[in-house]
Amino acid sequence: MAAKQPRQQIFPQHPQSGFSLVEVLVAAALLAISASAAVTLFSTSQVMFSQGKERDDDQNAINADLAEIERRNRRFTCLEGSCTLSGSDPNEDQYTPAHPGVVPPGATFDAQVEQFANLCVQPAGRASGLLEAFKTSALDTLPAMTRRLTRSYDITTASSDTPATPHAYVVRYSKDGQVLRRVRLVPTVAGWCP
Image (cartoon, rainbow, N blue to C red; front, side, top):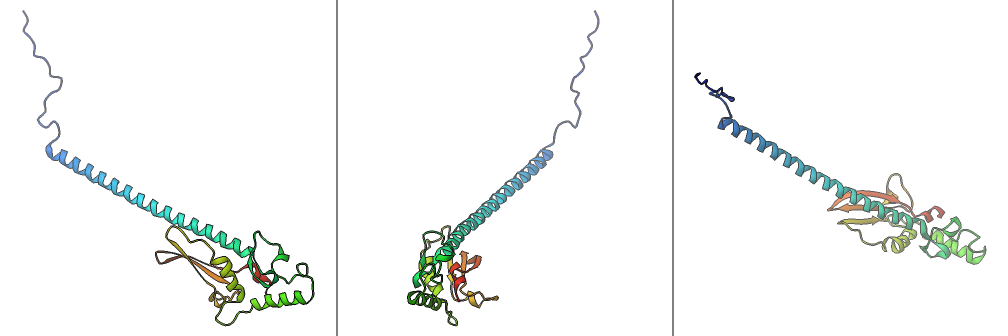
C-alpha cells in the first residue's frame, strides 16, 4: 500500500497575516473623524440654507409691500381739493381739479385749483399738505408687516436729499434693528403740482 501524502494547505499560514489591533484602531479613528466632518458640513449647510431662505422670504415680503405702496401712489388723487385713495387707477384727467374736463372753468374750478396748489406748498423742514394727506389716507392704513419685519416712513427728509425730490417720502424696511431696504417714492399726483 502506498504511503499517504500529506494534504496541501489551501491557506498557508504566514506569521504576519491579518490586521493588528493598532491598525484596526487607526482605521476606526479615521472613520470617526470622517463621519464627524460629514455631520458638521451637513449641519452647516442646513443652517446656511435656512438663513438664505429666510432672507429670500423677507425680500419677497418687502417686494409685496412695496407693490401695494406703489399701487397706492398711483391711486392717490386730489379731486375737488380733497385727497383720497381711488378704487382703481385713474386716468390723467382724474388726479386733480386742474383739468377743465373734471370741473368746468369758473369760480369753483379756480377755487379747487387754488386749494390743490396750496396742498403742494412745501414749508421748510416740513412735509407738504399733499404728503400729509397721502400719509393719512394711504400709508397709515397699511397693514402691519409680518416675519418680524418693520416698516417706517419719513415724509419730511426726502425732499432735502441730494438730488432733492419735491413731495418725496422714504420707506425703510428693518428687521432686528438692521435696515434691509430704503426706498424713496413720490405719489403720482405730485406731478400736477405747480
